[in-house]
Length: 278
Image 1 (tube, one colour):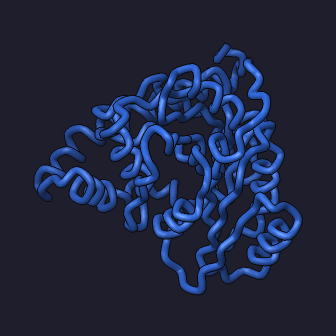
Image 2: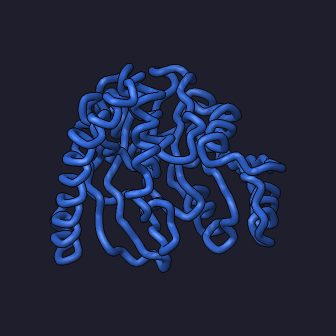
Image 3: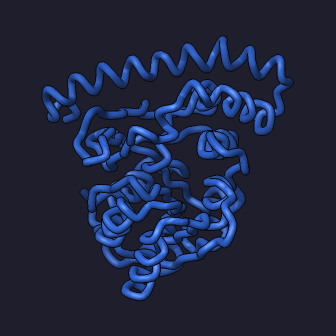
């Protein structure tokens, strides 16, 4: 892999977006995995959504004092993840915007690999393969996205893992924010980005991140997201309510079902032989 060499402070700065809420149990390790990146020219923008636990704020303040790359904002009222991510994006100064939730983790070379890959592909939006883990960060599966994700594909269902997504504000402008719906904000933003750049390239040679699925995780409650999926079609794509529901049942559900089936097959193969990606 090509070495990045000296970084240009403003041009090549990566802004990592991390919303937090009552994350004391996982937060320190997630922050550490960002700060230990081999691509060091980064800032970690954290906005806390009015946490009520005893550890989150303490951990954030300790990291902010220890490393000037950690920049925190503490909200006094809870607003939801879309609002909080947008608050982070507004404060970001980097050319590249990347995302990592407070209970997810990256491998140390994640940013370096993807920034090089984006340069190689001359692309403005990039994602990657990631491992699916339990709360002990033991791998239980893998998500391998299509190598080229088009606007047509992203409309049917979200194939971009937010924890691996990076977009280039130099190419796209700093104009993309997440709608303030409670869920599916990341998918809505990727739809908007792909309306402009047309293709998201995925790095699939090896997993670059660990996606934590806990028993009470929102990600486990997929059937409760029907309303939010339809809301994306109505608010972002301006579909009528009837067209939004038809699109959901006739296009989203079949596409989502195929994605889940592929994930199960890929996971079974990977758990048997991790070298299957090579």
